[in-house]
Image 1 (cartoon, rainbow, N blue to C red):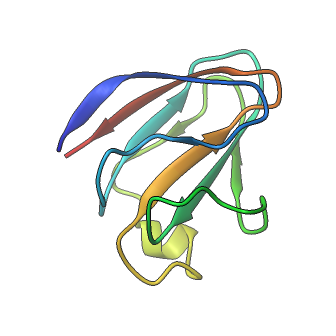
Image 2 (cartoon, one colour):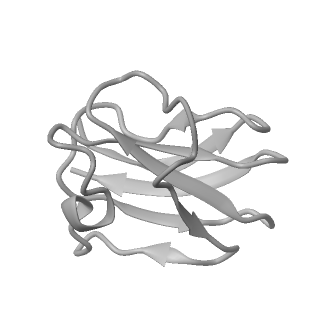
Length: 95
């Protein structure tokens, strides 16, 4: 199911940004804190931040970035998650 909205993330908790498996996603950090982005092959939250990428305030992860290149340890069915230490909001768009 497509998603095009801002997603609020509770402080220090992995929040799923996708509502289904995705092959491409556009993200923007629209809060005032750095965020960690992680992918999993299912709907289970990451158990650690190992392999996560960081987006600083205002940074954009464009949809043309191959998720397999960012998360080579995830084999299929990308679910994308964010964690923000003090909480915040991520702009999300995916098909």
